[in-house]
Image (cartoon, rainbow, N blue to C red; front, side):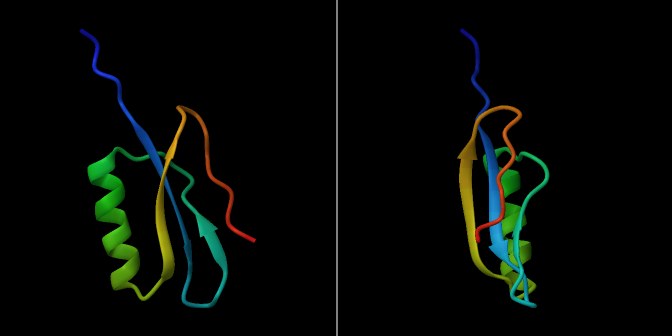
Amino acid sequence: MAIKMQNYGIRWTDIGGTPRASAVSYDKTSAEDRKAELVAAKCTDVEIEETKPGQLLEPRG
């Protein structure tokens, strides 16, 4: 039985108002940790999205 790894990316708006997206893929736990860091840094609209292997998110906008 193979374990399928899920990949996640993060989109957010930085404190200067610039839309951003992660340049790496995360596992679920790491994505949640990164989201918490971004929220603590006062970033807004922080969202975790499931991605396919090798897929990177584009910033909103």
